Each structure stands twice: as C-alpha cells, then as structure tokens.
Amino acid sequence: MPEDDAALSAEEELALARLALGEGDLKHAADHVAAALVRSPTLPEAHETLSRLAAASGGDLDLFPLGQHAFVGAVVARAHLLAAAGRPAEGLDLLAAATGYAPGAPWAAVPWVTAADLPERLDPERTARILMQVCAATPDPVPRRLHEPLLPYLTLARNAIAVHPTHPLLLGAASALARRLGEVALAVGWATRGVRAEPTKLGEVWLGYAYRSAGRPTDALAALERAVALDPDDLAVYADIAGTLADHGKLDTALVWVDRALAKDPTFDCAVHTAHRLRFQRDGDVDHLVALADFVRDHPDDSHEHGDLAECCRGRPWLGQVTPAGPDPVPAPSADAARPSANAARRLQHLAHPAWPHPPAAYDAAVGLATLDLADLLGLVTFPPDAPSTALGRVLGDQDPALWARCAQVWACLGLLHHRTDEPWAESTRRRVLRELAGGEPGAVAEAALFALVTAAWVDPAVRADVAGLVAGRLAGVAVGAARRSPAAVSLAHLARATPALDPATRATAESVVAEAGAGPLRRLWRRLTGLFRRA
Image (tube, one colour):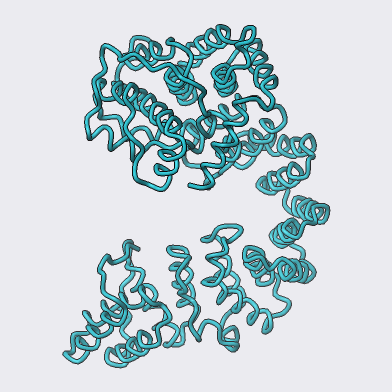
C-alpha cells in the first residue's frame, strides 16, 4: 500500500476535497480525503468530510478501491465507510491491515472502534481473528513508541470480553495482544480464563507465553507441555519449550526437546534454528552457526523469518562487528592500486559500518561495491576515504579516525569478494588479491582481507578448506611467545574462531590466545568500540 509523497497538509487536502465535492467531482474528493486520513487519521474534519462524501455518493465503496497496490488512505477510508454502513467487522479487518502496514499510525483511534457496544454487533470469533491479525503484524514485544496507536485494539478486546466473558479464542487472542503491550497481569488472567473455558493447544500456548512474560518459567513450561500433549505434531511448541529452558540455563534439557522435534522432522525450520543457536551457546563452536547459515541458504522459503543467527553473532568479534586495531603499519600501495574515484569513495562511505548482522549479511550488503573496478577497490583499501557526515561517521571521524579507516578497509575487501564472480575460485582474481593482502604484515589490512576470505567460506562451502588452511597458517605465525598478547594476535585469534571448518588444534590455539588476553589492551579497545556504537 504505497503512500502518496505529496507534501500537502491534512487541512490543505480537505480544502481540496471540499472544492471537488462542491463541483460534484467525487473521485478527486475521495483521493484528497484519503490523503488527509494518512496525514491525520483521527482529525475530526477528515471524518466529517468523509461523511459528506458518503452522503453525496450513497456510500459508494468504489471511490476507495482495494487491490494489490491499494493506497493506505483509501483502505482506511473504506474501513470507516464499511463501519458506517453496518459492516464493522469488515472495517476492522481493513484497519488491522493498515496497522500491519504502518503500525505507528493511530488508524484505530476513532470512536466507533472503542465504542462499548461494538462487540455486540460482532461475532466473538471474528473479533478474535482481528486481534490475532493485529498481533501477527506487530513486533513482540511492541516497542514503547507503538503502544499508543495499538491501545484502541486493547480497548476493543476489553469491551469484547465484557460481552463474551467465556469465549476461549477471544480470551487467548486478547491475552496475546495484552502481553505484547506490556499488560502482563491482564494477559495471564485472560489466558487462564480461556484455558479454563476450553483447554486447547493454542490456549495453552498463549498461557505459556503470558507466564513467560510474567517471569514464571515453571508455569510457562507446564502450559507449553500441556500444549504438546494436546497436539504432539506442532513442532513449533517444542522449539518454544527449548527456548524457555535455555533462557533459564537448562541447555541440556532444552536440546532434548529440540532433538525430539528434529526426530519428527529434520527440516522443521524453528527447530533447526533453535538447535544450532543452543549448541553454539553450549560450546561456542562457530560451525554450528555456519551450519545454520547453510540451512538458511538452502531453505529460502522458510515459514517465517528467524533471528537466531543474528542473535548469536551480535556484538561478537568478526562474527557481528569489527575488532579495534592496535598500531598498524601503513600499507604499501599495491601495484594495481590507484587513489579511489569520488564515486567509489561515496559508495563505500554509504555502506561501511562497524557492525553487521552476521557474515553472510555482510557479504550480501557488499554487493553495492560489485561494479567498482579492481583499481578502485584496492585504492579504497590503501587510501580509505574520510568518514561520512552521518551520525556514526561523525562519531568515528571525531573520536577514532583509525577505527573508521579499519571499517572502510573491511568493506572494501568485502567488495573484492564480488569482483569477477564468474571466475572459478581457485584461479580467481578475487582470491589472488585477497590472499596477497592477507599475507602482508599483521595489522588492519591483512585482517580485513582475512575477514573477507572467512566470509567467502561462510557463503561457499567449496572454499572452506582453502580459507581454513590460510587462517591456520597466519595464526601459527603470530601466536608465539610474547606476540600472543599483541592486539593483532588477539584479533587474528577472534578471526580464527569465526572461521568455518577450522582444524581442532588451530581452534584450540585461538581459544587459548583469546583467554590469555583477559582484560588487556584489546579488551579495553573493545569496550571503547562498544561505547562508540551506543553514542552513534
């Protein structure tokens, strides 16, 4: 439902609507009313003009057509006309759709939605489905800034329960909405009443979620286990139980539940994501996350989006963000490098960031540099542009220019991964150039190139042995004697920990280097980097 980009205010749109009405041009009047509702969904004058338009047209719904690319203002206007015509359930369906499109707008904050007598004209199951539609379209939990626009739906739920106090589906759906809005006690109470009225799998799930939000894990697990007993084939509940157990430190029991789900269906997405996340939490082996990335790549049509991979990588060196660097030798310009063009510098400034969701996401984002030629990419590595004039760029440029340069070099090397991707990896320009950069003096450039190679191993299983061997060789060269405690050695050890298919001996070396670093210089730099992220 694409929005109009016009800059007219709601009052200006209504003035044009009234002029069109006076001229009998109902279609243009409808367009301006719809635009006014987008700018101010609760403006009384907008609803008054809509009523005048309805009277002039005989309530013609075709003035606000629906379709694949319907304008959100037309959807909302049609919803209000349907309610006025005695069809409030259809109107609520459309308001819920508008809420899903733009949850920050108060589409439902109108008198007819919150009227105490509205539920008397609605089938309680239809009301429950509308509340479920709202829940499905909003985050869980709902951010504070979205609470107020959603409160009319909670009022609708209260009013509906007052009319239908024992309807199980209505009570459960209302509980789900209340829980999302932070009304945890209300959510527990409604879900409990729903299960008491009729024990169902869905009702027990809603009750389990409510208990979990209330900080009552034992009760939550009991409810979720009752849900499994009612429907042993709903594997999503197994994953929910596992997640709840893991949140309370019971990883081994959690994995038992995951394995039960996987035994029934080894490809069930919720169980697969949960299993790899929990196994990584248990032993820190990055190959669990690599296997999850492989699963995501091989199953692009999962039932819904999961955040397990990003959650595990967030804030972790090289998995989710760059490490700070210690003193770095100035890189010698490559024979292929020139100073980057202004276009290349702008594109890198737009793209470079110290953090990313996970390595495959960083690879995908770097495709924005794919059309740069090799000289530009190497120029960006050797002569990183100044930090951009964004909030993050100003923080990094003012407080830690070296960190910005490091970010730029990391993203330039990720861009090299997209250079001539038609060339087979073993003989490719991208492999040759990145290996040359990675083989230089320990420091930011070598690490940026190594991270690009590690990222290649994440997205292409065929290159994993090649990259793992290179990383192992580099770590062996620096993880000796006093050099083991240098920032470069510790950062390289973190890179090794992020490398797919690394041999156990090298992984053990990387773990020991990181452990020995303790609260040394890299840890202090790491805390400073985290502080920069927060300020930006």
